[in-house]
Image 1: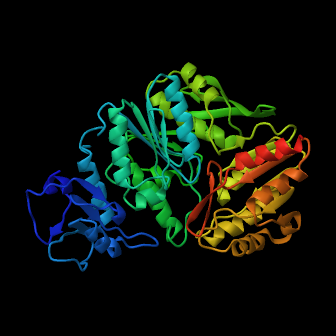
Image 2: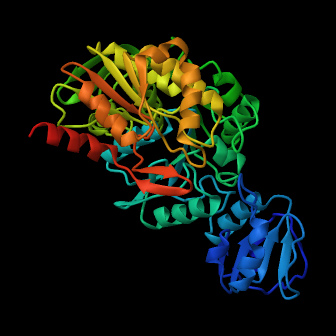
Image 3: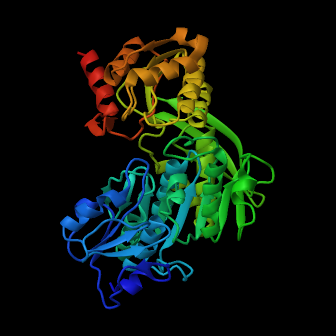
Amino acid sequence: MNILKLFADYPFFPSFLDSGKEIRDIVYDSRKAKPGTIFVAMRGASHDGHESCMDAYERGCRDFVVEHRVPLPNDAITYLVADSRRALSVMSRSLFELDPKTESQLGATHCIAVTGTKGKTSTCMILKSIFEAAGRKVGYIGTLGVMYDGKTIETPNTTPESYEIFRYLREMRLSGCEYVLIEASSQGVKMHRTADLFFDLGIFTNLSPDHIGPGEHESFEEYLACKRELFFQCALSIGNVDDEYYDQVVANRFGRLTFGMAEKADYRAENPQFTISADGFSTVFTCRERGKRHELFLTLPGLFSVYNALGAVAAARNFGVSYETIQAGLAAVKVKGRTEIVPGTGDVRVLLDYAHNELSVKSLFDMLLLYKPKRLIAVFGCGGNRSKLRRYAMGEIICEMADFSVITSDNPRDEEVNDIIEDIKQGAGENIKKAVVVPDRKEAIEYALSLAGSGDIVAIVGKGDQDYEEIKGVRHPFDERRIVADYFKNASR
């Protein structure tokens, strides 16, 4: 693509301008640089891409997008910009030929964003199941990776860099996807990964203090502001009116619909009922829309699943999906790593969940107690390189609500496992008497299972769909489903 067309209307100041220059591709990882590419130097939490410009040059790259001057040989051309991440977004949009001035830059494909502290993945998967029940082709970008056309591609972030988003959006459009669901994280918004997208519809699930600390958000106010910013890019917002921050996040937007338990909600859930059987959890509730009531059955547990389903139902109804089809989608939905029951465990219920912050663990344990387990046994840790406040809160909530807890490792990253565990123990306070520490996560899971008996629920919390343990920059294979299955297989011998 021509260099001028690539930058579109984004201001840049070149050290030398060749208006006829053609760029083959954009890269922001210097290891992928080659002749004909343009390298975008971006600043991250732990690395500044400007320090990699020379590496990209040595690999054949001669064009560089930078925020300040960098030492490079004379034949290198630099393009000075105010914000490299925003430049990457604009350039990626141009490269993959998506026009932000059209009502939907994907033509016949509708773009839907889902944001909130928790519930993004589940809401997307519920809505995906509903659209597929309606015979619609759906693409997805989020925590579970990129899904379209029968493929699943892993991604390192809930919301990938803008280059990947625009590339996958183009591929989804060409494969015939009618809908694309995107989990829009606050970090994704802050880092301009979604800055040049226009969404037909945005869904707000909920908000609570989280992702605040080094490398994330400086304050709750900044966190909230990033959530709010997304809705400037949405033609219609659908929000949880029961959430205390609803008006601050989605106020003064183009059009609004609401869902919740409140009488004023456009889509209101009534009389939720929760059951458990050998096949797992189930929930029945009535959805009231414009005075009419529709009974819905959901194969996911808890009140938070009702909220996630309501958001998805409201979105589906906006696109004309019937309640009969919605029910078919709800009955079929499964969300990996979200209140996921592991099969083959006899009279013991073993559940995997991604809950990893104060709100999500409180909601999870409130839900589990609705099912009146004989005992609730928890296995959990906290991630490294994240706010200590999360550790204190999770230690306090889980050790108080569970009958017994096993405190262990959970992606310690660059920190020492025992240092993280000490923070959790501090948060647990007096309830640490109901817990033990087993730093090895596999041993912790097996120990919890050895304690469990008929009628007990074992909640293995924090990793959900993840199949790895991240330690010192290395992701080691770690499949909790396999660990549980192997334990019960060996126990039956």
